[in-house]
Image 1 (cartoon, protein in one colour):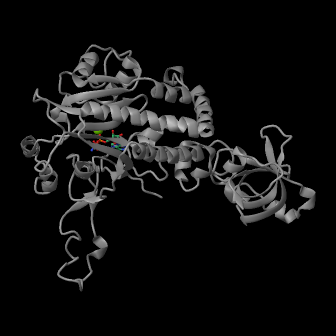
Image 2 (cartoon, rainbow, N blue to C red):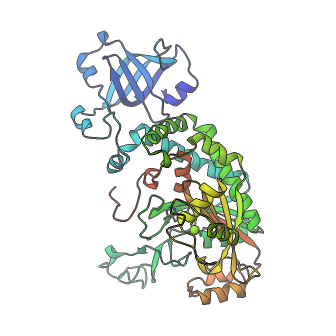
Image 3 (cartoon, helix red, strand yellow):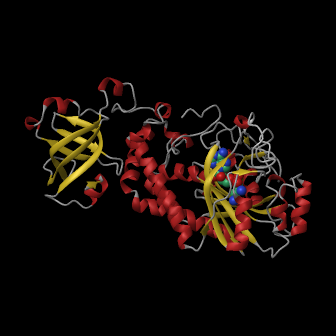
Length: 479
Ligand code: 4AD
Ligand code: MG
């Protein structure tokens, strides 16, 4: 039977025979193979009695090669591991040429993250990316686990849509160029020379509007899928294709929404602190090394595990937009004593420097900002009695800025309709959304959490391009 290295190391059966597959990480003294199969950051030490092996076979045990090993598990006398495999048979499955390997990031030495991005097809074989991608997968499991055990149904909203859920015009158009020359189909009058769908369509920017319609039938639902934004933001926090988690709850107001968001984030982070200890430990050590090379003022005050525990164990601070503006107006954020973008008056949108000041310098904990001016938020948010603010919330995280955006939704037909008119939201396109307010409308709320921003926080990485297998950013869809 084939065993993973993770299972062997977590419950070792001494004196048992094992079949192990993996890639060679190191081969010392023609005797010690460090084998890794991706199931854990730890390598399995495999000891070859080289005198009893064919020399030409040993020559093929090169770094990066895929091999199969058969042998018995023994207690190890060496330092660094408690068990090892005494190898009786090696099979080379896929040879990696040593000279070729030297030109790649598989060569065991420290490579820059930029270099790793250029070889995105190989980077998951490095310790750093192995750790990040295992944590990403566990976080994804924890998301489903949380919602499933709290009575939410997973709904799959469409990727191709006719609407612009955020009303920000940041859509990628869907075209059917390769069908342009197709003649009339045999199955009716559809002419593919025209648009495939008979209208303009785009890749979704958010599954929220469709999720709302499902919450108004299933109660509590969530989506977790790819979303697309054609915003020209070349930053370390933006992707053109990212995964979003969007719960939506019927009979729930903004307070309930904030409670859920906080509880949810704490649950998924605490799940990985329990289930990804080796990977977190590795990333923490890596970050500590990196910190040492930075000027003191840029160093992070908290090691990774401490940062995660802090978020898990402390209440998020809830602050209204109006209170936040007062704080910002009266703050001297840095040596210059002012922000790059100075907030002159109530109603201005916060920039990331303001958000990070509130979280990192003023409150020193995650912050939930709520009740934003209606003018700077989307059309679907519920208008407050003051007629100028909406029941919106953003969750701001240290080192990240905005990680969640959500709101209580406008459930009143007339108010929603006039808001759509005011903001020029296409009512012919969104007739179905508006119609849900006619048949048993109710208070409902939800939010969107950018999954990669969560993975960024959980792994302590600094660039969103390094927490998704194949990042899509302006001028970059190379892999
Ligand atoms: O604040 P946003 O735009 O909210 C919505 O899309 C709502 N429809 C969500 C809802 O209420 N169901 O986006 C939500 C989150 C942001 O807080 C951020 O974490 C992430 O999605 N996000 C991005 N992540 C990576 N790259 C981008 N370009 C992102 N844009 C938004
Ligand atoms: Mg937002």
